[in-house]
Image (cartoon, rainbow, N blue to C red; front, side, top):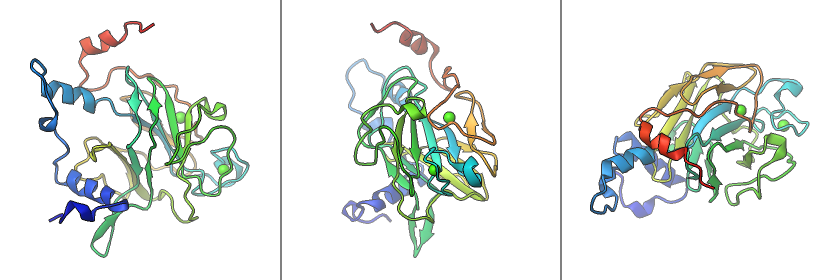
Length: 263
Ligand SMILES: [Ca+2]
Ligand SMILES: [Ca+2]
């Protein structure tokens, strides 16, 4: 069905990831190298819980100055859109290779996404926030990363978060207000989280599917790691006041272990 793996390069590799995810065959624990005494399934379960969490999405940029989410003085209907991620876990996450994409579309029998951002190598520390702007037409203050290079540090204008721009160069490319989705795809190609709204659908095979409310002039944001995404008339790129808490499926004793001081 998929043909030679060599055919899939560039954008198409993401398509392959979608196809694989859609088949319900994400990379499994069976391929992990294991040592005597280790419990592969347990380790795999732990690892799958340690993804960054989508905490806020701005897909409906408000008219006028109220829509200037990146604060550069210009409201851009797509450029000011952003997706915020937080490491709610107790160990660092290597963001490199994670992909943010919008919904999968099809043209001439081929799947594609109009938005697609692949993180460069960078570590997201426990509690740290990353925010990825569409970036069309945007001007920046402070450190801002791209798909090719991590920011040199946190950006004080955005709560000290790691700020990235997708650098979208078309004014027409962005999240659709009427219905779309945001996919978080792990470096192994598995769709670990799919947030959708409106007339879109969740990506088949996504490990976590979550519906966000329809809003028209603000973001959707969660207040806790487990809590629902709530609509609002504002936005807080780079700032998340939520509490990490324990994630579904996390073992309590493991969480307790992590509280031990490292220094
Ligand atoms: Ca702006
Ligand atoms: Ca926020």
